[in-house]
Length: 327
Image (cartoon, rainbow, N blue to C red):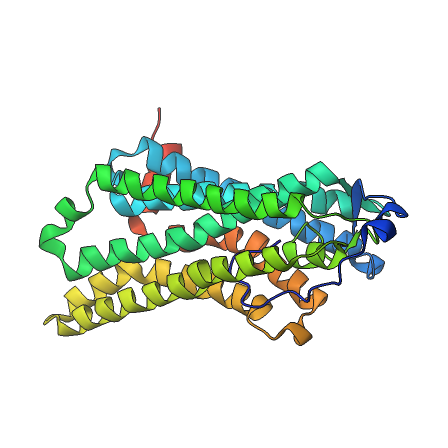
């Protein structure tokens, strides 16, 4: 998968001539290598992945229910958290069923169409999450740096437009990248060195030119990776500055607590993707990419609801009210 934060060009394979291509059979399905090189760990990995998937689904569904049925949580911060939980469910659900199936079988295959669909939904949800984290940082900036104008600035209409813009923009961007992938020919090896369909190994399997794909990837990376991350850094620069100017310790503590959960999630998410993708082309590693894939497609969706729940009294109160206060 290309998570839209991969700041490097894929090595371009020399395209085959039409004559050479005609002598080869076009790929109709791919083999997901997954963790086939470590069969002794399959049972352990299956147990871990199934546990993470179950916790991720349960935790994010609980957050969605708590926000939906508690009027006290119908605020901009929780509205964006609702969207984040939805993205986490789509992200992990686009990967985990096939990954679990692969761990229980000797060979994991995925159809060409299935691979493109997985690539689309994973890239859509993952890139949306990156953009939403920036929107959530702006929300915290407005709440802490301009509290008197917060209700006007972050109105229900404006928040809805922001969320819709995130989903639509990322869907459009993902459609472009998936469309560019569909125009490529795959006529050689069909083994993807990953446990899901990701852009880098797919481009390396192409027997046609990937130049346009690489250019579009760099442009998307500049926006989703660098620009978004810088905007979050700038937002928190203003936030920290405003907190330090507060006179009371209690005020500083309360202000920091409102954005600490988001800051933890941002650090965790960007650490995972930067570890995997901010590196020279020559050092690209399938094993490192698999590890990072586990972090941002499984561990992050699992920890997000726990972080926001354990560190947020309002969410915990809403969950107690939802499940234990009904007669």
